[in-house]
Length: 192
Image (cartoon, rainbow, N blue to C red):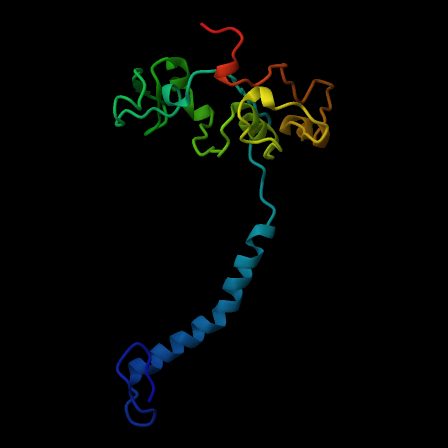
C-alpha cells in the first residue's frame, strides 16, 4: 500500500496520474531541502550593513519622570495605573508620547523608543548598572542603594568599551558620562 495525503492504494493497481504528481513534488521538495537548511544555518554568518547611523546619543536620566508619563503612555489602563498626562500623536503613525513633549512628537521618525527593557532587580542602582554595562551587578537585589559600593570587579560602561573599540579620528571624545550616582528615591538627599 502506498499513501501520499490521500487514500491508501496498492502500488501496482491503484496509482493514478495525480499520485505520480504528488510523488514527483515530494521528490523535488526533498532535493531542495539541503539548500533550504544550508541557508538557514548560514543566515547568521552573513555580514550585513551596520546601517546609516553614525552616532548614538544615550540620555540616561536618573531620577527622571516615570516612562509611563513620557514614552509609554497607557491611556486605556485603569486610572490608578496611568498618569494624569494625556498622549499626543507623533509624526509616526500609531506612536504616541506625552503631551509634555510636542516638539519631540514632530520628529519621532528621527529617534527610537525602546519599550522592551526589563530587569528583576529591586534596587535602581544595580538595575542601572545592568543597563549601562550589560552585566548584572554582584550585589543585585540589595536592600537599599547604600548597600551597593563600587568594586574593582565592576564592569565598564558600554560607552567606555565603544571608545576603546572605535576611537575618534578627530580627537573628540567618543564617550562622555557626567558623574551622577544612581540612587533610590528612599535615599535622595534633596527631597521636594
